[in-house]
Image (spheres, rainbow, N blue to C red):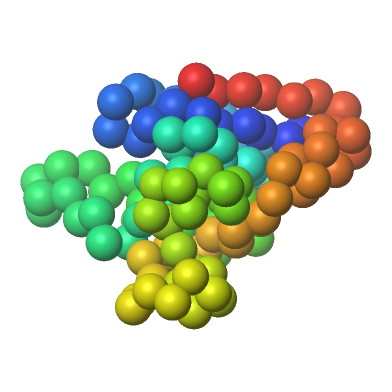
Length: 130
């Protein structure tokens, strides 16, 4: 079974990013299933902000997603429009908008909605986390 995940809930104001991570880990643990990609849209793009560091005694959701990306090699996509609108920039977008610095974790790729459409069409199941 091929899965595509859509995450829309803010990482600190909902459990969407946490639940999506747990679900993604379950899919990865079963070799008969394939996770085609995870697309972060709307408020969920904040999860990729590497400048947002929680206190040491709090759960570091970004670090957990980065660890998952390393082990699962599953693409993590940030909607480029939603990301830029909320100040999430990689190096290329930072240069294009003539801004100093980037804050998008290297584990995430900025992509357009066309990437989501492609994932959606290739997947047997699509699961959304709000």
